[in-house]
Length: 122
Image (tube, rainbow, N blue to C red):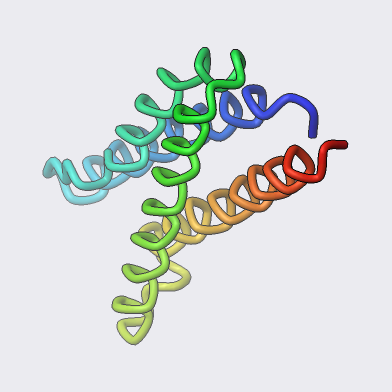
């Protein structure tokens, strides 16, 4: 992919929508506010703000975006593993974790392939 900033934009928007959806569905289901459901949205906002630096090929900003994506992926994986024994995988919460986890690993793969391509000079 020649446009990592576009990948970052799509990923950021997906995280924003996922977090807001999780928050809203939790409220509609239980009539309480679960602010931790907004964690993906927070990461989405931060990654969205890094978009210009990624577009300008700022290496530090790109590495920060990769690190944040990795942190979110590990967090989602750990939470999924911790809660998998409770039959959570097919619940709203489990589906949200799987969306975040899957999209994070796809984006990480794209970023890493881009870094390798740059290192090789092609």
